[in-house]
Image 1 (cartoon, rainbow, N blue to C red):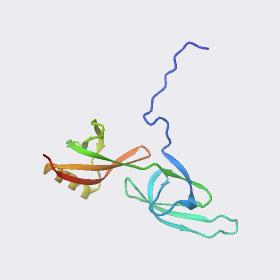
Image 2 (cartoon, rainbow, N blue to C red):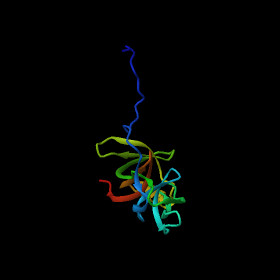
Image 3 (tube, helix red, strand yellow):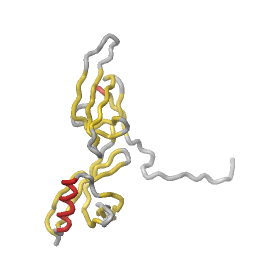
Image 4 (cartoon, rainbow, N blue to C red):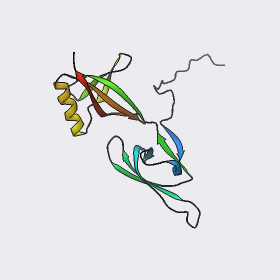
Length: 160
């Protein structure tokens, strides 16, 4: 055996997969699917009949959960599709910096400073207006496939 030390680059996700396989025929509307390496919410599913060669096909229409783009895919219903692990977490808004980043309070009392303000204009104006009024705001952050984005806002009343 060699005496040299091995150094491993640590990754924060402990090797957990960003997606899991699911049979195409079992994915329903309002579920999630990966189309062209983007996590999407399924808005339409149609299944074609088995043809001469015996594979029913599923036609998926999905909306990218981060940028809102419409994507489509056709997969044999017996094949597996990648489904993203989608998590929603609520954080309390502490501060908005001038460069468009938000400072959020996590459940364990730490701050999370690596998220930008959302690109959605109505949500952006709601967050800025509520913050300027001094309200206590809770933002919902959706995360999937290594990406995170603020997707919703809750007002929990004025600051004490």
